[in-house]
Image (cartoon, rainbow, N blue to C red; front, side, top):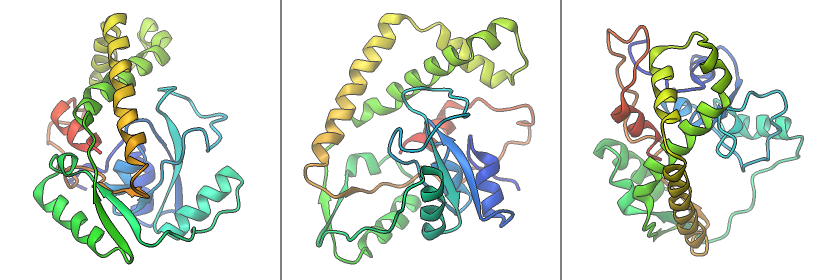
Length: 242
């Protein structure tokens, strides 16, 4: 109870983690399925963009947001994903050896204890061959992601912001700051985004899967004075690093 359960699909992650429900639904633009899954010790899946129907889902960031399930196990997550996509799914036959991509420079963003646990898990993959991967522009991913997410979110919430609808101070501050970004800066961010995407496309030519920690830290404590919300850029970045 004293620690952050991750966001923004916080309720979904906590409910599955406590065993209140077997399966829950989440929306993920910057980690909002994966982060609560990690913080609550369950499985979350952000599927391929556009694969899960988004009818009836309020979209905050058009070019980033996916919907996906959270569940207590991989098998339950696969079952839930099949239901919401109306697909017949089964675990695929994996290539042998399975080329497991690891970008060491990216992994360095994680705390030592987190990286060590994930590294131990990678080394236990049966039939896995670890392949070093270079992602030359990975440092751009955080500022590009923040610019895209907040500007698209501010656009989605523009009418509500203009009407002065109630919002927590951290949310309003983030959106108001995004509204002040120039069009030129946003276009530059999207050009940088294309470089990051290209790096990943090149990586897929050499690996079957890329593995990273889910978050850079374990679930952080909730500050005693955070009852009205919290705007901590460093903490957010540590959560959405991967």
